[in-house]
Image 1 (tube, rainbow, N blue to C red):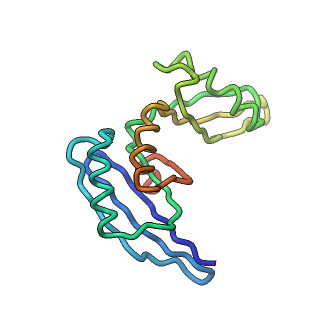
Image 2: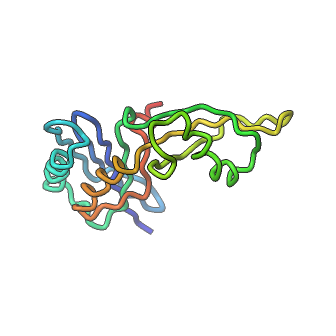
Length: 161
């Protein structure tokens, strides 16, 4: 089954896009584009203009979408949780992080990776990434204007790391 994926890398200076067509046999790049941002990435008008420029050179109708956002928009925290169950960590993490953040727990979107499970103490070291919901909504609104609904949103530079 063939699939087209549009990958967007949104940075402060511009937006890079690539379309990858994948099939059972191979993956190949079918198009790419770059559009500079006039201003900064969090200004919806500037992002919309860059996406419009990209839409002129790439046909991304019917594409699945993944996007990366500038990494300095995220807050990162390391902490230790006293249990290993991923679902429990997901439930308590916003409240564990709230005292160290300038946002309320209901105003953020977060994800985490377990770095290490300590069998001796039954605890987990966690690296979390936090983004204010309002900021994420701004990016999603700009993408929605082009009928793009990212399946995955990640941190810019993550593939390089």
